Image (cartoon, rainbow over all chains, first blue to last red; front, side, top):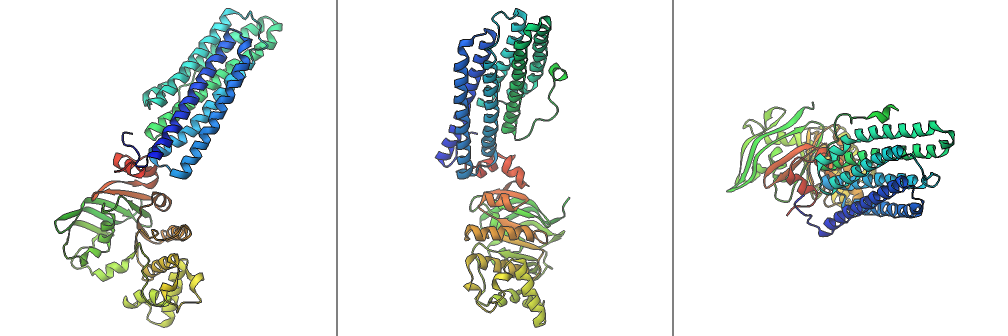
Length: 230
Length: 253
């Protein structure tokens, strides 16, 4: 949108909302990254820090809620402004959930042994890296209002499903090798599933961004990977 | 598909040298509310004044193109303008009741159009019109009082009742709520919702929120041109034209 609002404070309020969402996105990205690092390195020291930083994400969510309520009441936004406002509301919900899932993964590091098999860790890392990349890309597409990039993220969730399938299989292999692995394997199943869920939230965000930009919902079915067959 | 009640084709309007409308092509569907929006002087009032030929009284006004009502050109020389105005009623920005009683305000139109020959027929028209305008309960015991003694909102509903009394097919409303408080506005909007079951309504409004609330179709005018017309929801959620978007989001001028 090249033209600015006649009312400058309206322009500023919309800009502040976008800024808040970008900051929240960046915190969520760090949170996801840190929690994956903690899992892969079985780094129990960082757990508390990750749990605490989830609070910051939740606070952003409340702040964004307030900003949106104010915008709706004061400005009764229309067309692109309405889509911008409603999209921010929805995206902030998905980001908050991604933050929760990352926190949940960090908590699961505690009972893990330090000698997890290399292959299992590398499969989890591949999945974690992809989900982190997806989040990064989707936030980029929001900042630059890049429809094609958002749609690309949406399509790529198929790969998240595939890697989830692979990671899940290596957890099950590990579990079936020795009964004493059962306890922490269950945690690893949750970690894997949480990453796949985070991927789904990222896909939601991609859909919202596409709607925000074009005012139309994405048509057709999203390609599904193997995970959904499990 | 809804029946097109009014169809303007390549409508151009000139006030002397100044052109007020440029090639306006707009269909108004029967029993639907069409909202016309746009900045002051964009031609929306000029457009609705063409529908009941109010521009006839302005000497320097010249019109080209056509406006059809049910397929008949309303500027046709054989068409009687009085009977046209019987079919196309109008409500203005400022409530303008006649300086007469509430009863006479309503009965005046039917009388001159030869409707309601007996007192009881007229009584029935007055009651029915006031009921349709959701004013009956408030005024039924004071029909002899002057129309001007009513509140602004009541006066506007009286004007709507007056428009309805001759049983029109189309009602034109030129910013009917701009002089009213929110409660009176809500009552008029509720009324518009009910009236659209019977009449084709065109409303000119400066309130976007009102256009969204009351209309099914919206047309955006700018500098005498119809820039975009479409379903109201589409216009306010995702208009096709950038000028429309700039106007409704407050990025204009």
